[in-house]
Image (cartoon, rainbow over all chains, first blue to last red; front, top):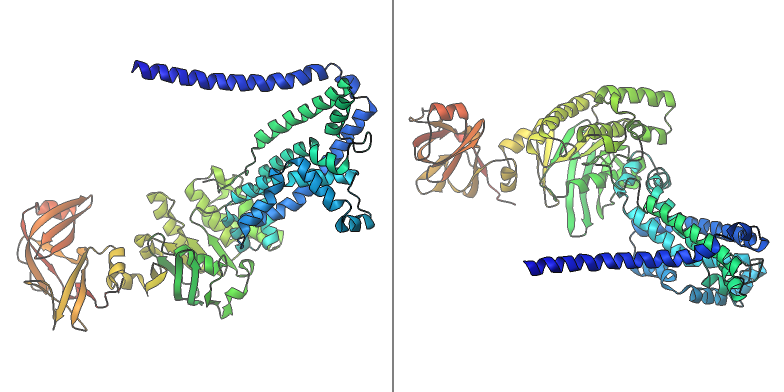
Length: 270
Length: 349
């Protein structure tokens, strides 16, 4: 009995210490950047290079997130609702970019959109992706689309398909039942998907570096700015970029946790 | 007329096995059967959720299978009502009318008709998650009825209600059907519900329709062992027909009108057996003396198990049991008419 009590106490102590240590480690690491970045934040943010990086990051991340939504909604719906041969394989393929190191994804994109038949064809019709802003958007899209897909697919799977069917019996065609029933019920999941995709897009570095390069005031997003300024020893600017990225991550995390990645009403409320 | 012709549908391990059924216009048809027997699949196939591999579904001679669900003019109420949780009760109800682009003033008058029919005025601005089972039920029914469906499909609509609400809603369903005369297919596993509501009942088991008939036919003349058990008949015996007599065991023969000879199942409804302390008079062709094996109290009704050579179950009201002071071990006389003996000559299922 006494032995059991002491075992329980030791177990609780070990669990508590683990929680405390990891929490302290994360807070400590982030604080180090914030301590260095916050004092000079107000002045750094007025520097043109940082302003350019913020604007470019916002622009590319918003466009790539929009592309993720437009493509993920029908695909997630199809993967959640349809049944077809090879579905598991297709699902695994769609998730590959999530498992791939971003830098490898960047190399793969560079080969496809660079000096290949396909890349040359796109270039011929005015779509250049190598060392351009388009390249940043493409890299962000490729790396992040599986995250949006996964959140939306799980969300739609949790919506009772009979609700759509009832809507059909009430006169909706498939498109109407999707927009009038499924999409409103997937609202929270969609918002969570947008937040996570956008936050990842704004922080995307590896794939964008490979495809779009790291050129000051041209393809300089916040992570690239951090990389360039660290390389040249300009710590003040590097910390300003890092601080902005940390703030974006923290806000995104809280918003994501609030919306929870689920459905507003996954069942009929009974 | 709604007509299903040899409809075959495979869903995983389950099959609807060449189901044929005819439902008259304006009829209230109840599909009765135990859980997992395919009742909901029948409704979902009529409504268009599933497309059968074989067979046809016709309504007024139009092939429903060539139509999408939205063109079949069907109202569907699920067991858990499947209300749209993001819409208020009012928005739920007018959903179909808006989709069908019914003029606003007509929607308003239809809504008022539904409010009157179902008494849901106070619920209109509430969300489904705040409603009780009965309130959700009314909302789902109003949502289905507002578009004036040609066929109303009800999937165990009363199963989630408490007994009192259930009884009340049964009466309301009957009243609504009498008012609107919509052809209705209602599935349930509750025989009493079916008896009360149905013009005709179809008993289903394992993807097949076993017997179709009026409630009285199903209740008094079950065609199979399964139907007899499902409608609550407890006295089912193996028997052998010899001339006008059916032998149940050595020394136990009943008078019954049999059409053929050989093995049969013999069905006697417990409530048609008369019990007495003394020898019963001549109007009962079947009379036996037996010992009481058990007295089971079901509140108002008591069940007696009396050994007459086979264990015969009789239903008696509590007053009769107390007046006769019946207890286990007593010797009693039982009697029933030959018309109360029903023979199942084909022992299927």
